[in-house]
Image 1 (cartoon, rainbow over the protein chains, first blue to last red):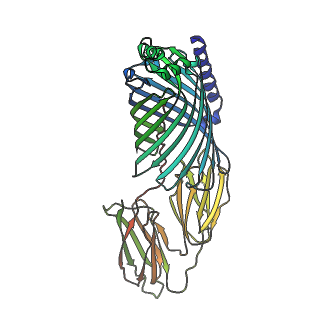
Image 2 (spheres, rainbow over the protein chains, first blue to last red; image 1 turned 135 degrees about the vertical axis):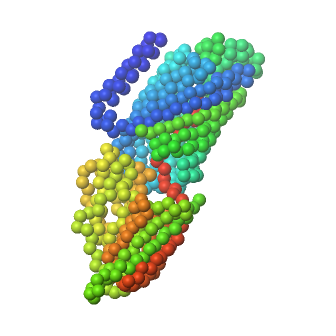
Length: 299
Length: 219
C-alpha cells in the first residue's frame, strides 16, 4: 500500500510538471500565489472526550498557479493547480501534503464591480497523508454567489460538496458545506471578514485506546456504543500509541473572524480566529478552536 | 476620515507689447493638502463667460489610455469635446473596458493587444471607466467645452495659458471631490489676481486589489 501511495504521488507530480513545462503560453499567463500560516489549535485531535483533547502548533502553506481566460463576454474561466501542506508540530503523523487541479467558471451578471457574480468550481486533489489509510483522492464541486454592495463591503454565499476516497473506510468521507461570508474594508489598508460554515457529513475523530474501548463497551451510554460500533475505525497512532481514528456522521459549525492588513497591493497579512462546534450522531458535542497568523502574496 | 487640502490659485496677468494686440493672461493653479503636500490628478478648466465662445479643436490623433499592470494609465484624462480616446492593452491578459456614465456609455469587451476602435467623447461631463474582469481598475475621462484646461501632475502645479482678458468660470474636479467647486473670476490686462480655493476631498476608498485571506474550514 505504501509503495503504491508513493508511486501515485510521483506520477501525479510528474504529470503536473510535464503539463507546465510543455505549455509555454500557459506558463507565460500563469498567476502565482503563495501563502503561509502559523497558529495554535486547541483540540487539534478532534476528540469528543475532553480526556483526549490535544493542543498543538499548526503550520500551513499553499502554492497556487492560475491561468485566467475571459473566453466570452461576462464569462471567466480559471484553471489552476495547487499544492498545500498541513503540519501538526507535536503530532507529525497528522501531517498532510495535497496537490491537484481546480477548474473555476465565473459568470458576471452585468457590468462593473457591483454586478452579482456566480462561480462554480470542480476540483480533484491528491492528499498524501502520513496517517495510515488516510491517503487518497478528493473530488469537490461547489457554487458561490457573491455581491459587492459598496467599494468596501461585499458578501458571498457558497455551497460545496466533497468526497474523499481513502485507503481505508475510516477516512472515506463526504462533506456538504454551506458558507456565508462578509468582508469589510473598513480603512485604507485594513479588512475585517467574518464567515460561518456548516458542514454536514462524515467526520473523522480521534480517541485514545482506553477512551475508545470504553465508548465501544457502553460506558458512555448505549447511543454512543451503538454509533461507534456501527462505524468504521482503525488504530492509527494519530495522537499517541494505539490511538484510534474513527468515522462518524455529524455536523461541524465553524465561525471565523479575520483581521487583515494590506502590506501592498499584492500582499495581505491576517490574524484569524476560527471556532468549530461539532455535534456527532451520538449526540456528543465538542469543540476545536484555532488562532493563527497568515500571509498571502500574489506574484 | 477626510483629508483637507487647499488649492491655491494664482492668477497673473501678463502685459504684452505696447501695440494694441490681444494681451494673453496666465492662470496658475497650485494644489496642496492640509500638510502642504501637492495633490495630483485634479483637473482645472476655465470657461469664458464673455462672447465669442472659444473655438474647440479636438486633436487629430486619439488620446491614448493604456491598460498595463492591470491598471489604467493615466488615472485621470482631461479632453476637449470631440476627442477620440484609444484604449490599448499592454497586458498579457484580456480586459473589458466599459463605462456606465450618462455622459458616455460604452463597453469594449475582451480585447488583448489587437487594435480596437477609438471611442468618441462628444458630450461634456465626467466619464468613469472600469474593467469588467478586474474590478479594482478605474479611470476617469473629464470632457470639457473649453480649450483652457489642465491636470495637476505630481507636484500639484499647472499653468493655463492663452487667456484673453475677460470673465471666466473656473471649475475644479478631482475623483474624490466632496462637492462641486467653481468660481467666477475676472482677468484684466496687466493684473494678476490671486485666487485661493479650499476643497474637501473624500477618503480614498477605491476597491482594493490585494488578495483576500481565505480558508478557515473545519479539518
